[in-house]
Image (cartoon, rainbow, N blue to C red; front, side, top):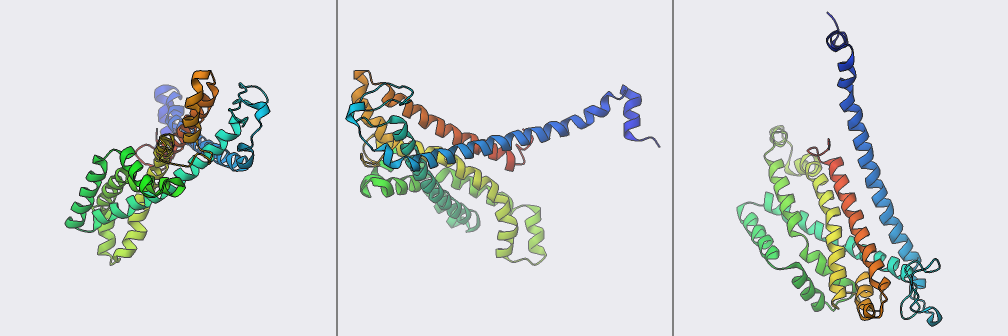
Length: 298
């Protein structure tokens, strides 16, 4: 009996043999590219945080002899009305925003994991209660509820972090609930139960690995929302204090000087904030391609 390669060479002169192996090579290349983009995005975010922490003291240093300078080689983002270097202030502000986003998004994701699991495994009453709570939270605009919570807690770092954590879990809770319900009805879970495995073992050995990839992707995709909402309420005066370097503070203070032609006070920090959000989005999107079997061939 002839091999598959000999048959292909007979039919197409050997052209089909190489075609059979082409998708495999392309798939490996796609996954390597996806992994490379994910690692590069995470490394860039880590570099921003590290640079912001290192520039903490220098970002608040004033030099009135250098005030209101336009962007130059010595000051790429220019200086403000107090002679502070805007590049250092922007890095410090981004570092603060990223740390607030990390803390708030992690807490919010844990809330979503607990409530989504309770809704899926706790019976009809628990499911109805969690679903009602999700609908209630999604019916109130995020920014309004976030301002109320932050103001009630005295604003500042913890007020913003708790406000973001309490308001950003509903969407991920829905995803977790759907994933747990789907896993609960899967054939491999039924087989595990019939083999005598207890609820704890089934949850840790089967349900957790099934839900964990989607949970991690949802956690990463929560970061951009947390950062943008932190910057928004800080810009409105309900977030971080003015003496703390933050993107919202920088943008809010720059509004009074735009009419004087000092455009760099708002443009560069705003673009930097957009760049950080896009980095988080790139990390989350590429991680989804790596862990989600439905998109692993994209």
